[in-house]
Figure 1: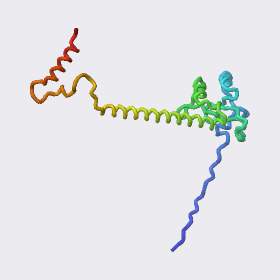
Figure 2 (figure 1 turned 90 degrees about the vertical axis):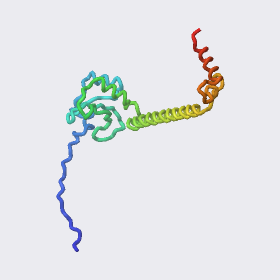
Figure 3 (figure 1 turned 135 degrees about the vertical axis):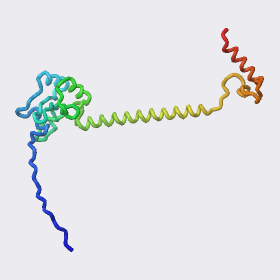
Figure 4 (figure 1 turned 180 degrees about the vertical axis):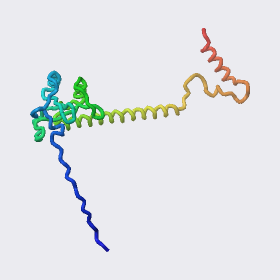
Length: 191
């Protein structure tokens, strides 16, 4: 018997991408970066003075940044990338009011430790929605049980004896049924 044979397969070393291919490279303090129009940047600063917007020439997208001195990554020291402004299927979107609506919906800049705070808010909303759903389903089940219980109760609400409505098997109505019919006739007849 022969032992296991080894097959030598040549491996290729892929070229590493340039760091400029990453969106984090194009932060506002990068030399030569293209900024959003001044009026748009001014509107961003009204929301939060630490927000800014730049353009990435690699992906052709707008980037929304927040100044964050706790970020010490060499690629974007002092800046946190909050949002790449793009549509569904990563299509280009122009700078307009939707950026502000999206920022407001996310409210990323309001939380300490932006990612953790945002995640904590999302989890709190999910737990609240689940608690409301459980409460509603318990109330609904309780209401159904009460209604089922009530429907199975024997009641004698109304006028007279219920047995009087049933005749004794003859074709002629019983005395009780005749009395009941007269009473109904009197109560429903116009005056």
